[in-house]
Image (cartoon, rainbow, N blue to C red):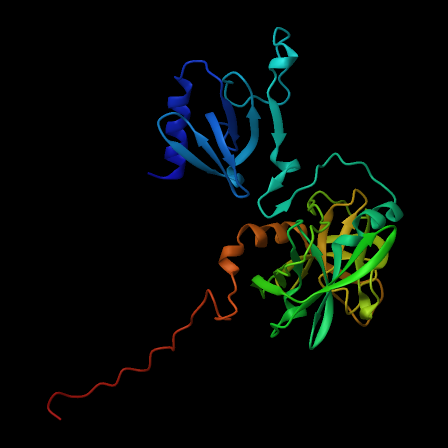
Length: 335
């Protein structure tokens, strides 16, 4: 039975259950699952609906309501709450867009704008330098466990990678180098790589929230943080010139924020402090012509990271290409 059929059956059966303490998981197809939330994993929510236990992917969920009474299927946010419902009985609503979506977090759209100075102070620790024997680039943490994003071309052909992080302690920045770095996934065509720090003494890391590049407007102010030419924690500010610049068959964000070698893999932010792009290239014959991979492409890469998984003992994993078949030689039977 497919997941869609299973969820549909669960909705029908849950609708006939007697009123009892229950939780409600609202789905993107306007249906809802009523039952008991047993566990909330990074990539899925496990719900007991009475006759079976369902594992619901996070990507299919819009809201999780934890309440004391069984609730009706999802209602529109614009519908008023009945006046007879006491406030104490209202379930706790947690929007997926404001909570953890597996490996990374998506920021709230309603965040207020702040100054670049304040945002740099808040977000600076999440910016890192990525060093390899052949060069360096920038990167940023997407969660506190040490997962970080950089460009594919920063680590292309390398397995010996070190990450330099600036920790803020007692009002001072202390540089720490981590050398146990694992390549988790890579996509050459999207120019993205997912890494993970695995040093035993690694702390919890400051990380970013991923915003929406689609929600940006041309002319909106943005800023980049990276390490151009090895100059750590350099901040450049500009505007979004266009968000539909086609280069090599892909769409990129174009910005006047200065991008230089070493900025690759760094972050492009809007003024709410949300990541909207990953800086990766510039036109060398001009000024103020920098480009960034849109955050929607970053989220797609992270959501489908299993398709781009990398293994140190098999650099071609998960793809193996067989030799093409040779031309068949025909021979007459009477020869």
